[in-house]
Image 1 (spheres, helix red, strand yellow):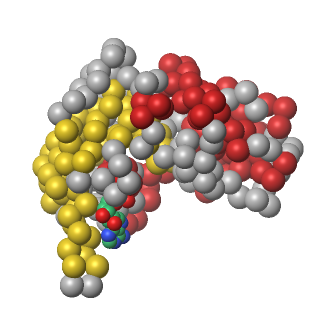
Image 2 (cartoon, helix red, strand yellow; image 1 turned 90 degrees about the vertical axis):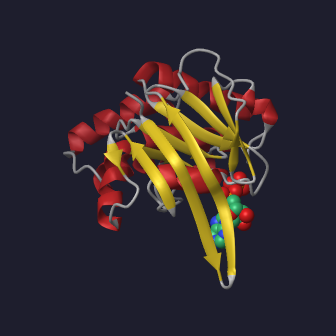
Length: 234
Ligand code: ADP
């Protein structure tokens, strides 16, 4: 069964008198445990698509089924529950909470979304920090670690609730090339270890070399040039 099925998906923003057709009817499926990137220039619709998949923003038309749930027109409350159960997010500017330590940042979703007891939370935080190679950095604050380390923490935070899907919008945009490559490798390793599907966006063609499947967006449409290289199915 596919993890994501999009059919004739459209998103139109209305800004004053102007309609912006950000996504103009796209169809795709993404299998569980895939490692996929949407690529395309700035303004091609990548963030819009990721936001719809993450149920942050509803489609204007079409249908979207993610993790077996029809999310096309669910309520805001249902969308929040859906995100808490199934989705982890990684952002381009890391979005760590500066007044919380690394360990507290990773623990945060467990407190907010899944009301786990303290001992179980701490054990899970230790496990994911180890998985991303940050086990000795738990007591530090975000200002005391590098950009690459911040993104490792963000990946740990996205994985801590054991979601089926991690959505990462331009996760390497604020990193140098070498660090960016390491973050992509880390996400792939996490996919292998936890069978979590990773879907991310990038406009950096150099990053795309390390991705198993790419969907190219141009002006809100998908070009039919996916690059399946094993591991996932399109
Ligand atoms: P990308 O992530 O590829 O840079 P986006 O999904 O951010 O592209 O944007 C796609 C198009 O939709 C762009 O033309 C952008 O200006 C427009 N857009 C995005 N968000 C909004 C919004 N909230 N209101 C109006 N237009 C928007």
